[in-house]
Image (cartoon, rainbow, N blue to C red; front, side, top):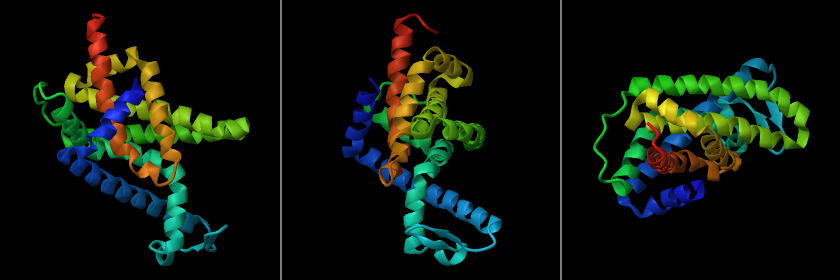
Length: 236
């Protein structure tokens, strides 16, 4: 079960190698969040003639407030929405390191694999990122229609996309792009459910800072479990 995969990832925090990767990954996640947030605030500053005023936060004025406490509170609040693209961008920068640390501890008998070239991983991540933005833009129409059920739509849409991306990127390390895609399609429902279980905590402020790293570790376990089951069934 995916919950068991998550508990394995969480339990590896006692491993010094994984803990180092985990802390670096969290730092990268925060840096990516800050970058996405800074871009968001800059866009707001461009399109609004007057300083943006928000309840409980006050005026948000790009340069003056970007590093202020009010802006920090706003960034944490907006992480409910911004952490999904951050998690998507994370795969291109750091998923390889997380997966390698997990395999070194739990799957030591596996042969080493060549590292996916950074530019290839980055291109894949940017492609997924573009699809994610487009899908969420279309989903805004559904949000208006489903009312109180909009969080479920948000989790379902982004769960599908994040599950697809994380599983694909992990599987490509061992199987290559074509076989990874074929395996993902055979188990698309499980991948979707796993992605949805990742998307839900991404909407919880502060906790969501840790999800991209733990998600990458969880999907590494998930991939190896699915691959073993597929081979036992006679899959390619």
